[in-house]
Image 1 (cartoon, rainbow, N blue to C red):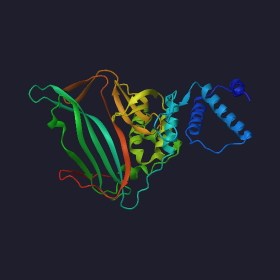
Image 2 (cartoon, one colour):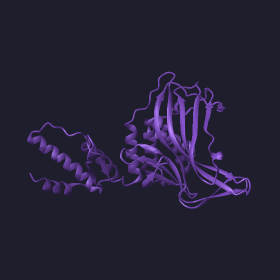
Image 3 (cartoon, one colour):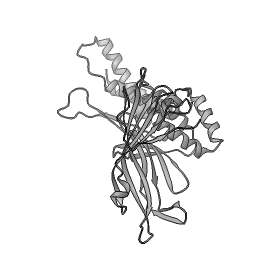
Image 4 (cartoon, helix red, strand yellow):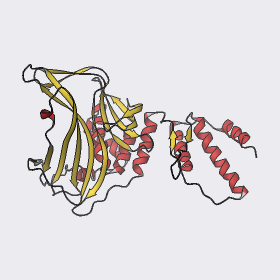
Length: 347
């Protein structure tokens, strides 16, 4: 048969794709093209049916204006990676991210185990020159770790180790070595994050209602809470999937086709203008759409007031945020620093 004529006929009959159709079609096409090739030959009738299925999938994708191509890279074993155009909208990206999260399993720690999360953190440090009084700031890059028990009644640990900094602030002000914060055992239902998130629903409507109630109807507050939960819920991807679908319904979200997380990994992001000269982002892997991290970027020169009577100018392009590097289960807390801060969270 003439496949090109068949494609032309199918194209003419194909209705214009919606964003929802587009995401589903691309996912279907990607799954077909990335499966290992089978060596078994099909009978002629089955080869015809497979051709029609692939032609239909291609027509659905092409009718929406997105083209996906498989590119073979020399020297690699297995199927070649997919190189596809980025999603056409923030809503489409968040749907793909939700599907990626739903495909991950929640960690299931056993008795006595901890969920260990490793992150890259980028934050500001504000200070003053002790001689001139000049306001100074540095962008500090640090490694952050959390050890959280699966249940209440056990201690949990936050650890940070500054690794580098930019700006005029001297090293002795930002390099404090290993800084441990040990949270004493508590029966408080709100901490630690793993135990708290276990009580959250995963139904999208219920998650939306809970966030809306917490935010009191404030759109930016709801977005801020959602960003925090997105970072925490890497220990519970089933909740992440619902969060991303809730985010897709927020007014003001936009697509950032080229984003970089604070660990330097390229990605694609959804963003919200905070209205104060900054833009906050949720960043996802370009290929898998898994969550990488969050970032807040200055979109213009701004001034902040970190202390009484102190004004510090920050240029456009500066950013803070966090990037998730790994989530794993471990059997115990590490050795605690002798200078650890010991904290008990009041209920």
